[in-house]
Image (tube, rainbow, N blue to C red; front, side, top):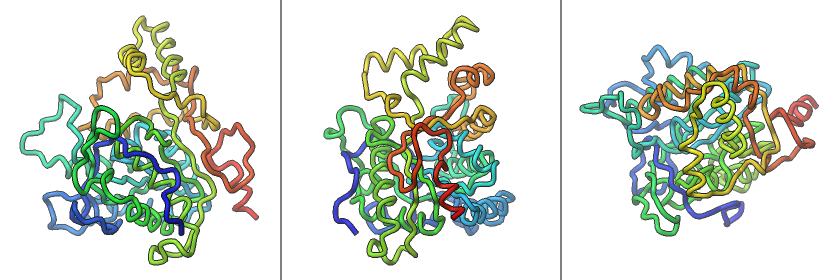
Length: 360
């Protein structure tokens, strides 16, 4: 067990998470079967936060069993609910459909996230409980298992990371070691061969996304070490770790130009201008792996729409015709950050090298 946090960086600004049963001021490791808090404590909840008597519960349990026992297993670690549906979602649906075990881990519940869909009526609505239900529906659409890690959303913060004043007890404000231990416990339970997460910049400057990177890298490196967190289960070493490269400049420009050529309007024009006005590192130069996923664009979009509090179904996200997207950019893109198997680059499969290793 190392005392330092591998790959650690200053906290980023992500702001969406369900609360755990642990106190916001308690840095102890929350139980991964404790979903974010909601106002309805009457029915027992599954580890995915679904009431045990819900029609979704049996299917969710079946996906959880498959995610732990399938010959090939993938874990996607995200900061908030909805991140899994906007970053690499088509890959998750693809691998689940092919029979791999796929589990999404949400580090927080997005409690501090705003309602971004103007069509949603929020008066009198338990938003954290609604986000739990949205996440359950998205997992069902993608065909994946889901686990709440149980920490509190830090909220989005403007400005440089050193100026952020994060809420006490929030994911980005806590000591990362208990957070790493919590994820190590889930890794050892689900035994993924491959993990995905964000790069050291969090994909974008959000405290929870940056902390998600720190926790994911730390868990990848600690899960196989029998001396690290000995009470967190039997050691298990994942074989590959990837960073999502969802929104490279080239991808956005390519898709935007193609849509403008067909329709006369670029859906990402404002987004591209914001990037120009506020430059940030472009992850596109770091892509090592392009997974063909065009057949799963529909599942990706439907999963994202399931997070109705977070996305307007009439927004630019859904303005790209799938046939055109498939023609000009039909892949989910990743950076291979760690590999313990021989996997020559570039790749088109997150399990490249792993398939051969598990057959031996």
